[in-house]
Length: 180
View (tube, helix red, strand yellow):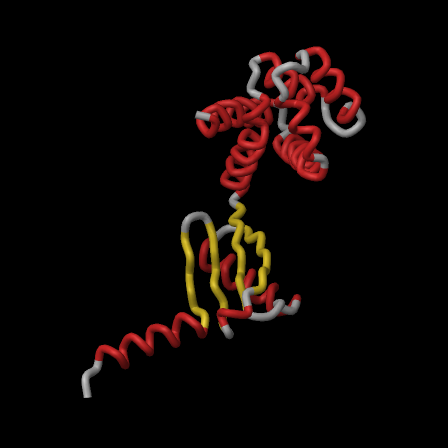
């Protein structure tokens, strides 16, 4: 249910962003809001607390965000409070981010490697992926020494595993399948 609410609210805000030509502004402001709430977990607890009045929640958000977000986004937050959808805020931000990246042709890819990738290797990989997927690539690198070597690419709901670990497992299954 919360996911559906997140999609509806994010879609509405996204449409307003297109109309006002403020997609990028809204995106960066929502990222700022998300970072603020993630760094101060008490804020989300206060925002979601049923005994704290709508007025108090509105004042809190106004005090925290007035200097850093537009009136449109602040009013959007007020609508979320008025409709008692505070528990869906992070879903809304996540869904808006997804819509934004689809619209802008951006693909997020996580490259899992045994050791940290050097910048030139990241840039080369980004270029290969950009040519392959015909999208702008946002590449992050995480380390998992257990893959031994190679790379595992994670994007959307896909995984491309070209790690040494997976190749060794495949070889092992082939060898075990051959009877001598």
